[in-house]
Amino acid sequence: MEDLKQITEFGTSPGIVSELMKHGIVKKLKEGDILLQENAFISSIPIILKGSVKVYQTDDDLREMLLYYLKEGETCLMSVFGAMYREMSKVKAVANEASEVLLVPVDKLGYLAKEHPEWINYIFRIYHQRFQELLDVVNAVAFKKMDERLLQFLTRKTDIGRSRVIRITHEELANELGTARVVVSRLLKQMEKEGLIELGRNQITLM
Image (cartoon, rainbow, N blue to C red; front, side, top):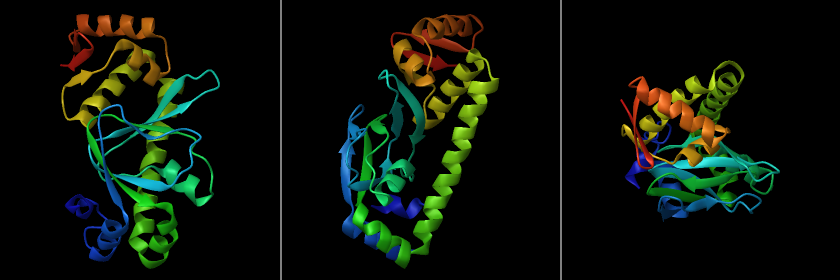
């Protein structure tokens, strides 16, 4: 649980760390494990201790759109606000890799906000960060060509995974970018010719 002390707002406040340790439950996830399902009741708020988690939303045709990644020290704002207003989950969260998550019961949120102002600071910092990321997504969709979006996405994946090797299929990559697999495959081959990446079986190496 020492991981919590690495969170900016919690590092100088042993009180909130003790509260989270007391009431939270640590859950270990394997890659692909579902942390939160769409239209499910929200009973706890996740804080990522180790690893990373992908957050998706599904449209009426059951196509998934990647919204953002949760990295170490972050929480899912959609879960926080959904729990506050007693709504069912509007997103699906899936482990991007082997991860550890602290699950904080939703009935503790009011107490944390009242007794620990740093909890509010933490939520607003994550909110600001998510807002900036979503603005980047809107900007990319509206103004950038797909090849630029693809390279930007791969670069971000290497940052999150802390590796130049990205293990992903063309189909998965297309789903996360909201485009067709044939488009992704064509662009990846062109990027390989330009020396930007190296393609392997179900993996991409960013050069």
